[in-house]
Amino acid sequence: MSEHVGQDSGTLRVTIREAAARLGVTEAAIRKRIQRGSLDKEMGEDGRVYVYLDLSQNVSHPESQIHRDPLVEELIDELRDRVAYLERSLERRSVEAERYQQIVAGLTQTNNQLSARVLALEAPTEPTGPAEGASEPAQEPADGVRAGRPTPHTDEPRSSEKPWWRRVFGG
Image (tube, rainbow, N blue to C red; front, side, top):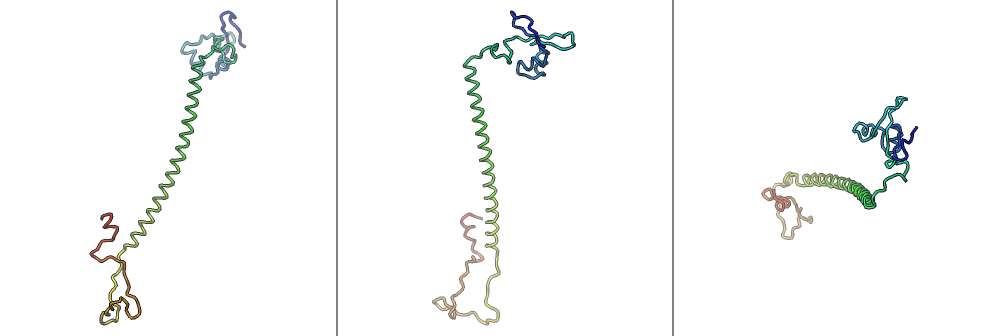
């Protein structure tokens, strides 16, 4: 299918499909190059479009490639290494972010549970008064023992006194 136009000039006449294969690009890229004028084309007698390739651009024959500068190859390798490092770093950060979100969700849930417990603990209870049927309040002995029973000690704040956590944190 391909034919050498001139051995001296190093030009090759090939179809669009073959040119794409030889240059390592898509057929659409070859058509775009034809449209821009960077590749010469010719309509064949069989109705096919042929393009002229410079043999130095032929990927299928590495010996015909223009040798790249070693410095450019080194820079390309370094950039590939950097991209690989950044991809690994991004993956690691994504895992860390997911773990932090789980921790925050757990702390939020625990905080909500503790808030509910604090509200339940500070809920007002009815003040305890003298027992029904008792005509007069009993005198408390000096040792704090009433008829063999210790006097009840309440941790409830007085109505005029704020809870300790409100005094400390304000409110």
